[in-house]
Length: 104
Image: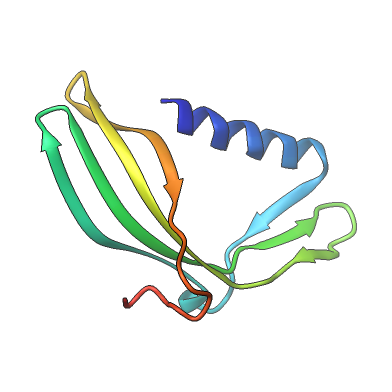
């Protein structure tokens, strides 16, 4: 869906800029969590999730670390069922206090 295209476009821009993403060595620094699934009807669902995002952005040519900040992101993801597959249609950021982790 539209959200997938946005993600692919962002990745393509990063690659053109010579940036690469690396998973952190500590698995706790990159941990997606599904907190709730709401089935709206047979073709729509909402997933509320949280991710501890510690992905490392690095300059591919020099190896320089551009960003290694760990952040917690809360979001509501909207899915539609098309041709017997669930597809992400959009994502909405949820405002949460900075000190709220994914356990909440």
